[in-house]
Image (cartoon, rainbow, N blue to C red; front, side, top):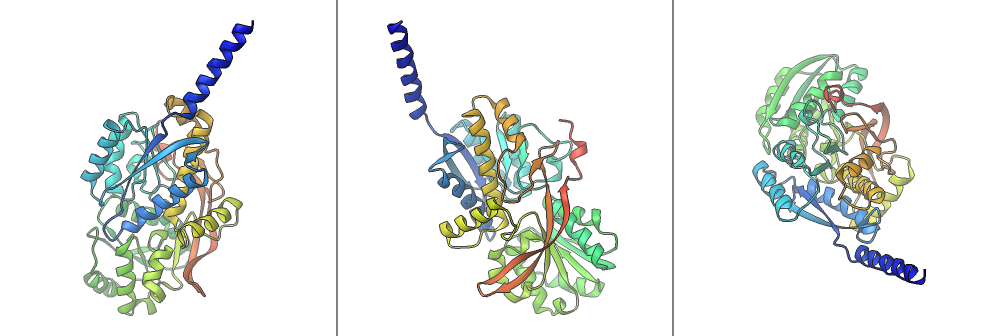
Length: 386
């Protein structure tokens, strides 16, 4: 009996030693850190890292190592990084992509290779409907969502005609489709610009000639900065109100745009003023760590890391991907958004709001003014056959 007890003790010590000395689980982040949109990936990365730092290098009590590479907003480069992560680093969890054209080049191949992909931002319609996959989770939204809420709000506001502008790539088309799904007035014009475009003189001239009652645009990152400045310089902001999703009204953009964005209403599933404990703690911790207000992108990076942590806590690792998928599906974590669950296509079911750009003693920011959708489900979920 003594030998048995001694043997079990030794086995226990060996397992403990193996666990303690185990290699951390590698998480591969492909994101945009260069170009004028580079701050988007920076905020996603920083939000994700904050969650890891709060656990001293762990998620869900399991040691992790975050590998981060810049895709330069180029689909082909994103594919190369993903292939290297899989073949060289044996990575089983990927995340981080900002732009939908990069996501469409990377995600379908990754999930076919039995790697889990969790979206911190880009969520194209093709991956939400018939292209859904058990290995793919969107932790952000479905592309159309933050435009659907604005379409509903603009309809309620009473604007009879709206002019639409977005870049000519998958997300641009999704975002305008989302707005049109809920807007009940007349579309005075629908224009798709070059991705990364900086001069909007021609578009503004055509817009002025169309004489819409309002404008809705989706131009993320530096594109939105340039458009809003030129819109104000043209004087159109004095006669024609502009609306958009949160992507063109985060605090870092507002710092560059200034008064040109004041009073603009925009749609979002998150704002720093949402009244729940997880959000209060996140906003305070992010400001302390980085010296700036978190953006929507940062909140999505943080939530994605916390979701992964909930799955690792339940499974202890990634050896059993079926168990990890089941744990992710439960979404057993406190989201900074408050209500959060997954629909049948593994996209969020969540509340969505209208925010207004305001000025405070600390500069320009957003204030939540109205919840428009509660537990909103995306339009493509029923097409998913999972």
